[in-house]
Length: 303
Image 1: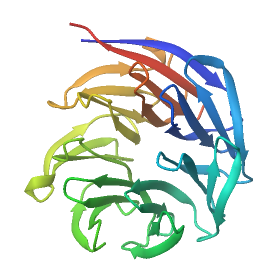
Image 2 (image 1 turned 60 degrees about the horizontal axis):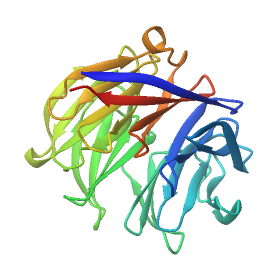
Image 3 (image 1 turned 180 degrees about the horizontal axis):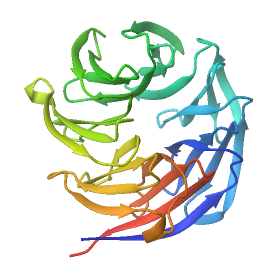
Image 4 (image 1 turned 135 degrees about the vertical axis):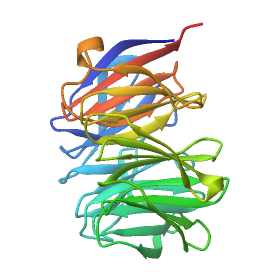
């Protein structure tokens, strides 16, 4: 049994909120969206928000680098900027593409960047330079996940496929005929045994990594597009969020639905929920929505 309580709502963005990322301290996080604002928030102070940067274009992709305490942001059609949030300074900036940027993910010294023209940029993080262009589709690369155990990177595309590459050789290893619409979210289980995929077709699919990514389970999880999937810090649960305005909490072992968080039951969001962040701060779950708001949820397991 789970107990869910809405703790706070953070407002201040002037457009849809598309991205949320952790910070160097567990009680703070960053957000970005259609208004071009990059904002830092404090989970202990719902009345406080600090703008650390503003760009002239919408931001779908935001990634926090804990090693450098830097934020990488994908400014749509304008390339990538690296920001020092403490000093509110732009450290590096490069226009690598005129495409929209949908996702940025770090692994070791590499940054993987998913673009709307179907390219995945593989960058050397320290040198801030492109190592390779992975062009496996003519349609958008939407989301990225890395499996440290198998040293593989999975990419979800708008051609409805998931492609798995080797992290080191960047060679294509698997192509999964996965969904009937765009793949919006990918997440490896913390033990590396499963790959979870969420799609615009509203299906949540679980793939068995050790059995050549055979389909383990297919769940009609939401009414509309699944936008994001995240695991809890203790790996016992995971959450999905959707265009249907709901968040769902699942058992990470049985993949059984445990709780639905929505407007009717918990005064949830009134529009599409785009991103989730499950923090280490008191196990609080953060959700970002098209309604320009960020909500914070206390998730407790009852014994």
